[in-house]
Image 1 (cartoon, one colour):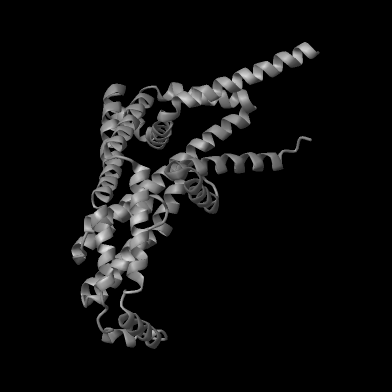
Image 2 (tube, rainbow, N blue to C red):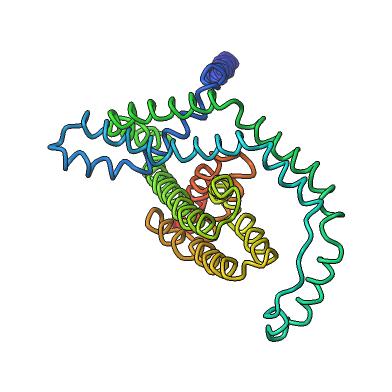
Length: 347
């Protein structure tokens, strides 16, 4: 008995040490592996349809999907990050310029607003009297810290490009061997927990697919509409603001921190028509969070929308950008296993 216990203990320690060593060695590649897996899981049904349209030639379909990933996923992210990093000094300079900015007189239509007209006019006059002399010096250090933190997080553009390129290469390999990889994961789930393990694996894939499509597609649509509105309204640094808006939409913060200040700035500058146009565009863009994203999430996994959103936000705060996809998958699997356990009649 003691010999068996010793053998089991050393066996478990050896397996644990081997797993730790594997993760240690693969550490530099884990972000690319996770991103590639997420992209392949989300888009593999599309790849199968592309393969059927291309005479069932897998290499040709893989080439088409790889190029599509470059254009739809890698290029927008790289351009957004590159635009923000390259214009950090301009962003800090813009915030410094707020120290001398002064609001003009309140527009006449502001006082005519029902219920809130007088209060809004008082707040406008108070802000105009104070200007931004008190707010500007407080924002400058934070602007520097935020931009420096962002640059430190993304590193050099060359490194970011290498990571994205590695992600696309790994995705191409996974596309080529997609069925074999899926069968391996399903076999692992069955070996671990029988049919429940298989169901958990399938649900995790559906959750990742739904969230990936919802997050990326919604962010792209919001940024196309919001960026076009910024440019048409004549807002300065429209390209930079669009890049910031794209990152905020992907991070589930939303476009409001970009579009609302721009709208207020247009009204403050006396450009009422452009401000009203951007205000309407902002309402449309913000509403996509409640219209488009839930529909896309439900297409992937039929789970409570609150559970999915909690997984998106919690995963982002816990694991960074990759957590947007990992969080919902973990919560979806846990929720389903708990539901199955509670309805199980066996004692």
